[in-house]
Length: 69
Image (cartoon, rainbow, N blue to C red; front, side):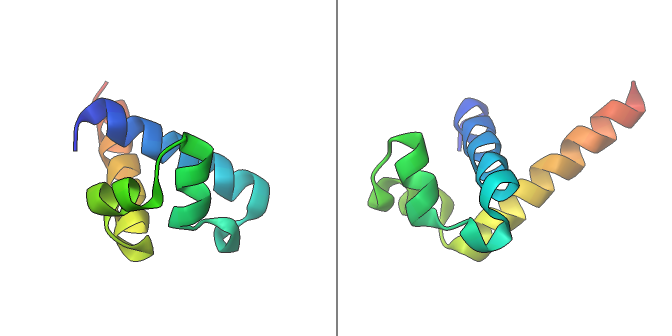
């Protein structure tokens, strides 16, 4: 997945979690918020557990990069 799309997905997912909690995070809600079809998002991300892993991995990469500075 391109970094720009990855960043967009992560930001939108974190926005959903901040407003609706982790239970409010779903691929359907995320796709709707991003203006994507559910099928398109599912193809790129996978399922909810893959989305969660993607977000956590990206957050960890940013944390490591921040510490390296």
